[in-house]
Image (cartoon, rainbow, N blue to C red):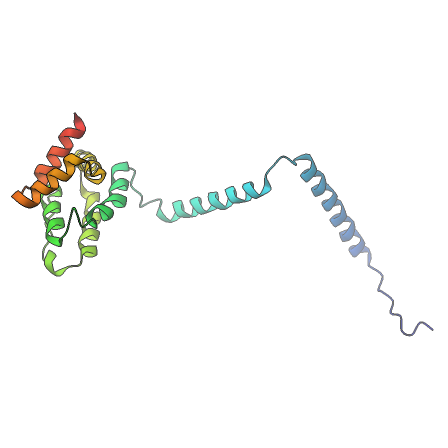
Length: 177
């Protein structure tokens, strides 16, 4: 009469112990969640993911990252400043800036892309000493602000062949005052 009914196999002793351990684990886990109900588990998860990503980034870049904040600023700011057509409309403008301010001569700038020139300059910022870096950073910060005085100096540079070095000196002077 029990032909159509299948019997479940009885769990072995190991299976019973495993089921009991799982049951106790779940009970303890439920108790922990209840006891710490004020914790935001989603926020903790996001924090751990960010911390893991930061650790991975540090592991990859750690030995290459500069301890000088001016170098870090320049790596982020120089490309944006050099790509600003109102400040640097041509490759020649960028090359003249690099030569007068950083004492970096860029050969055959007319045959290179703007990106190549900017990349070359970014790589060379690592060789600048702290004094030159601070001076350049403070002047570039002023240049990036684009206040009235800066715009006047840029116009003067274009109209009267004003040297970049003189502009940087002027901006650095007003920054130090």
